[in-house]
Length: 143
Ligand code: HEC
Ligand code: HEC
Ligand code: HEC
Image 1: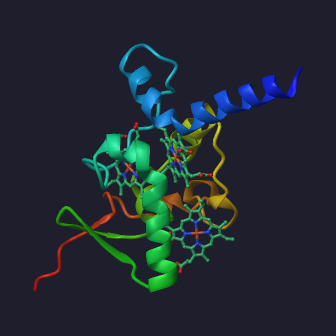
Image 2: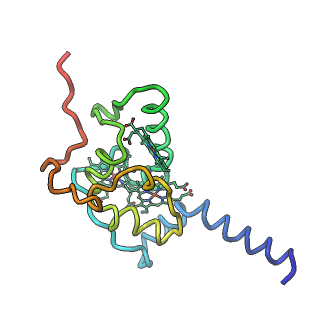
């Protein structure tokens, strides 16, 4: 194959990946191959679901920077208070990483490297020790 053809294929793959959240949403509305994901605990995500679908990776990076660079662990979102923690907060509601994060990432062919360091409590066998109610929202402190 010519270089030009390879470049064209590369471009198509790249565009497919970066626009994934958009066509994924559209496809999910009809009968698509969208995998069945595990239902989360709790009423709603920290931001609206559609926003999270497209932006969860940016939220995570922002949380990481807040914690690691600024030492701030608490986020206030829409009147609720959350600990900025991948394991405790995100996986506290999305308790099955395999059936939620991984399933969609496999489908989308993305492979976040986070789990080299961050713990998946279910895989580590500590899930039974976790609290029983949706853990993420910390009640508003009385002022
Ligand atoms: C209080 C519980 C809760 C917390 C905390 C939470 N989520 Fe969610 N999340 C939900 C619910 C409920 C939905 C809606 C879909 C469902 O019911 O499973 C959702 C939806 C999503 C979606 C879109 C899924 C889809 O089907 O389009 C993504 C992606 C997501 N969450 C990632 C995250 C990440 C990353 C974090 C941490 C930064 C997080 N969530 C924290 C409860 C939560
Ligand atoms: C419904 C589909 C879906 C679910 C569920 C989902 N993700 Fe994602 N995630 C994606 C897509 C698509 C991308 C790549 C988007 C892009 O590159 O613009 C992505 C990218 C990421 C990235 C950035 C990876 C990189 O290499 O740039 C991280 C981190 C991430 N997801 C974490 C999570 C975590 C943690 C969960 C579970 C709590 C989760 N995601 C659940 C679809 C999903
Ligand atoms: C080389 C190891 C390493 C990798 C890989 C890594 N992290 Fe972290 N991350 C850390 C350490 C260490 C901290 C600080 C932990 C603390 O102070 O609680 C941290 C903190 C965080 C925090 C805030 C605190 C917490 O407990 O969640 C978030 C959010 C986070 N990282 C997200 C990510 C995401 C998303 C990825 C993948 C795209 C990732 N990290 C990859 C080591 C890593």
